[in-house]
Amino acid sequence: MLLNFRVSNFKSFGSPQEFTTIPGRYRKNKYHVYQGKHYKALKFSAIFGANAAGKSNFVEAISF
View 1: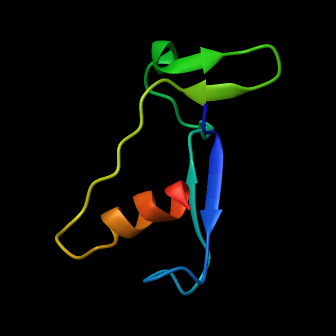
View 2: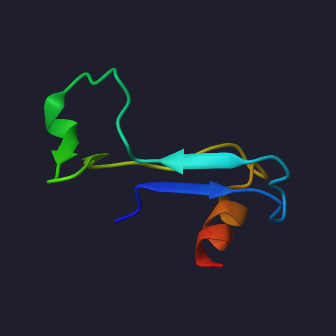
């Protein structure tokens, strides 16, 4: 399970960018959060954006 991923200096990512599934303070529905023994995580997350926004580069960074 991916909880946190940070990337910088890879293709179109110059400054550090972070993707996290750790829930913030605001949660509209408590059923959207998985409660493990040592952590909480969102059950669903998505990457979306305009064309040429870096979505494919982000997936390549995870693969690298």
